Length: 390
Ligand code: TGC
Ligand code: FAD
Image (cartoon, rainbow, N blue to C red; front, side, top):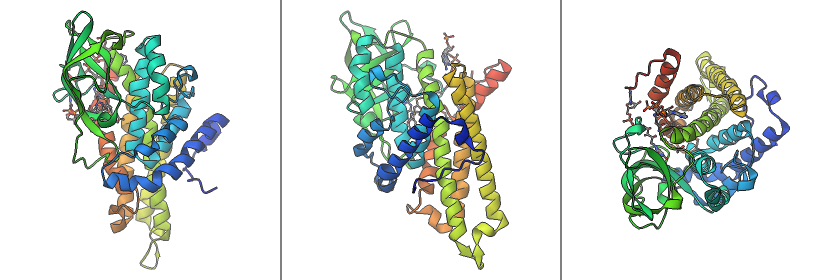
């Protein structure tokens, strides 16, 4: 009964199955119990709360849509989205850990790996016994990953990997890294690099003002000998990491709604209680305008994302459709966070409320997995047939 009441202005719940609601409510209750009470403190200290890893696995936060035979939760895309929504209601950094593990580590091993690789890694990734990270971005290649220079050479009985990745979520504590590197012909392949391999290090990135409860780092490869059986053989070329991004970006579109809901809910409750000039600020037109616009934007985002989930369940969602939802929903959430923070006046800047943390987190979310600008250009290229990147 004391579960958070998500705004559901257009009765979206009627579109959900019993399973969807059960999965969502379990995730919601877990976030409320295990994440919300501690997350502000961890964010202030810039530390990832490792004790939540086991619980994240139990609510389906690691590989929600990966088949059960590999340890995943075997759920559909709507359940996956709802789990992301609930986790990000708690914190975008925790959702990042879940996104990376699920869509950027488990997904490529499931889709492009051998049966041996699947059996070796997926069940342990699903429980959090193994944690993974995903290395695509490099110091000189962020929005333009096709230029990446990390490379590997065939040495007969192993590959020799050299290069560096930066801005890698989970890197400082990950047991394995899915790394995108070019072979001698310049073709991009995925390799599984394990902690402990000689020449592989993961220095942490400090002094972030955003996503502070998520650990970010570099991946450095200095003549790392990677066994040949660690290459993902199923797909090569930029399309392979891009397929992973499709899945993660879809989850982020849902996640952003969770952050927005938390900001809206906090601002609504505060505005009803906070009295100035002898009346609640919620009774003023200016604050009502803010709240009315927030719930309108949340509702639009929910419908967009639900429909996208149906398309993904049917295998019909395009990369450009996913881009539209990621871009729209993160922008929606960041704007709501800014307005909500102002509605709390001075209290809005403190850690007593979650809004400022969401606001700062969303600065990363609007940049990673394709920036706000890049997603606009993806839509532009899709509708005109004229890519403007190059
Ligand atoms: P472009 O010429 O468009 O494509 C190159 C090749 O890739 C294929 N392809 C896809 N295949 C399958 N699915 C997709 N979604 C695909 N997108 C592209 C394409 O067909 C082509 O294949 P081929 O065989 O013809 O060569 O590529 P481009 O070089 O023009 O680049 C465009 C693009 C879309 C890659 C770029 O605009 C982009 O998306 N940049 C953003 C990079 C990005 O999102 N990086 C994210 C790094 S990971 C991260 O941020 C994790 S944060 C994790 C967290 O904490 O949650
Ligand atoms: P740039 O590509 O240098 O972009 C700078 C600016 O230029 C942006 O505003 C961009 O929109 C704009 N721009 C770029 N190209 C164009 C163009 N053609 N036309 C107009 N404008 C353009 N990466 C991973 O691989 N794995 C991870 O786990 C991961 N986690 C991350 C965690 C955090 C906290 C952050 C901040 C980033 C993470 N990233 C990760 C990296 C992220 O994906 C990149 O930061 C992002 O893709 C942008 O790359 P960049 O930072 O190099 O910016």
